[in-house]
Length: 139
Image (spheres, rainbow, N blue to C red):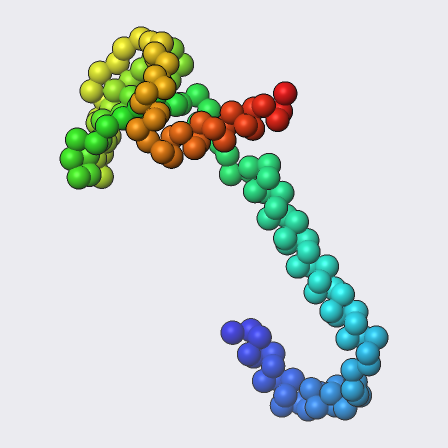
């Protein structure tokens, strides 16, 4: 609103027209300076976005203590999850409108997943191979 008021005031006094006449055509030096500034600003924005993505500014510190151990779907929109917090497992029921604690139990060791179970899922096999290759390269 202020910008419109200022613009109309300047236009009424004729100072915009006189300023345009005094400026004349833009020189190639000033055009180059404007383009260089634009490229610099866009580069800074891209670098800032990359740094946020790379270093994860959106990560929260408190979420590192909570881990989803497992879960199963019991309906179209209902699930039962096992969540690990510190040395305790909490079994929760999750619906679209609420989360209820069903029970708590001490943390347990999970048995290793058998290789036969991975063979039935082609994506699981591919993922295991990719992780193994990456781990071999890092050594």
